[in-house]
Figure 1 (tube, each protein chain N blue to C red):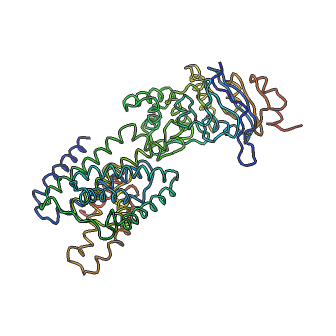
Figure 2 (figure 1 turned 45 degrees about the horizontal axis):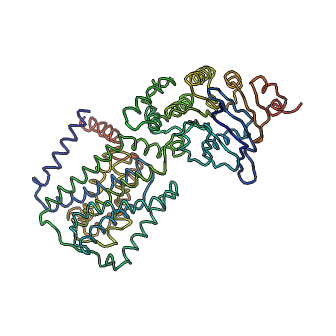
Figure 3 (figure 1 turned 30 degrees about the horizontal axis):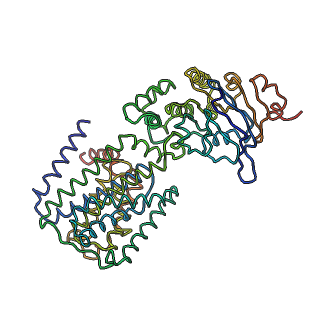
Length: 237
Length: 322
């Protein structure tokens, strides 16, 4: 069953259509990759899903119900977590406080929230840094913190926006393991990624867009061999 | 931790016995004024220091609280002490309105919105003469001749305010407030209804500020719009108390209140009569220099940078001995 359906999504900034008639769906339990060159409209699509930007036209359907126009915090409560490409740590709070703040999405008591936060920090391998201020973390840690915060809201679907960008090869393997571990724990994943090693090895299906429009869709092999995708990334011979 | 608790217990005992030991009305008066500023500064700090919504208009709530108590007493004949509760509640309702208008704005624009709001309420209080008696002000009869009852009521109010904020900051609300301060967009994506919780912070803040205003009416027995809705005597003073004591710390505004009242009084009395009289005109400049000093050397305030102060003092000590 489709958990998330994007139907003819259009997002215009003035005369520029950053996302122009994109349609795809994400099935429960899969890792779905969204790829495209810089400025092709991937992050804008994410921002439309959690209504960070209002949609120009089209529809976003989550678990069979339209979530178009719902406030960003309500989308989170429905079960869609997200991370930001440009990380937004709550800088002057500790790692534990960052994650505890998001755990309050599901519980009201401080004890329960902290317990949940500690579980998530264990899961994301950040437990050793729990008392550090978020601003003191290096980029790898900050990317993990983004994921940890999203996980603490107990999402059914998580939107990962380039969580592997800027990581060194060792951290990259850990990131891949973490994403697989999240999938195995029952969370559906919609991921934007530029690093082919990541996206090609973990995705069940991939959707490629360029200039806001769909250019290919299918399994990683199909998309990688699609002439339109090769042209978008490498240019024409 | 034990040491910190011990300090607080000693502080509590000192506050409780102070007026019994120091019988001078003058020093009791200063302590009462300082307690009022503990309440206003702490309330401002909840909204500005913890939630990141810097208000330049806390005189709105102080004035509304004072006028509610005053009008209840003069027009309706209800004791101005009931006005303490109603003052808080009416200030909260006005807070709801101020939030509805000003939270459409972010950052410095919010601050400017509250600044304008403060002036609007001052002008309303000045011109709505049938209700407020305008510039004539409101005069009531004090309930007590002695300062003692006022002292303990002010102490209780200050304690209740600081303790309530302490509890709030350890709860879900506190986490949400600080998240909003650190990054409003991230907070919203983490499922935090940022508009709702900014309003919650504003309502708690305006409630306590309103109570402080109502207490001021009871204690001083006279108010007029130029005093309780004043930009520089109330709104700016609330900010100075917060900045000097330490923005985003529980005890900061409490410490800041005593420092600011001390500095203000030192200048007002021309260094207790030791300096020439014209120096009393310099208190605004002294405030300015104090704030410049704090921002340059103690950016987190006296409480926020306490460890820095201690280190500095300890480094001085050995060298002065040898």
